[in-house]
Length: 181
Image (cartoon, rainbow, N blue to C red):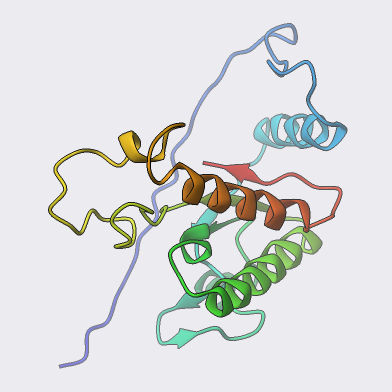
């Protein structure tokens, strides 16, 4: 039996009454790109709603890894304004697989930016203690945090993973911001 999926998206209206004084970033050291993104998003919010979709250009209904494709584009002839990616493949995998994932995600972020879109980043972190993906897979009853904080037996692994993610983000080298959620 073939399953057909039908999604209905209901627009949600958020009304936000904010004075110009209240409309400011809390980080006084925000980059010019962050300030520009904040300003543009606020200005757009006055008359527009930006639609977003997680993994929009990575896979969809009946396709996987097709160039310049998304289910949203197939329906409305335009990619979503906000595209979500996940860094889950950048930890807990063999180096060759991580390197391939880095290149793929970098291309996704750059393509989204070049279309005028915004990228959000999620991270289903692969647990360096149980090495079982982002789900806890072993019989250890203590939370992973005990092991990854300074002094913990897996702190070094954790710092290495964080540094690797930071290096990936720095390598984007574009005058843009991504939203980490």
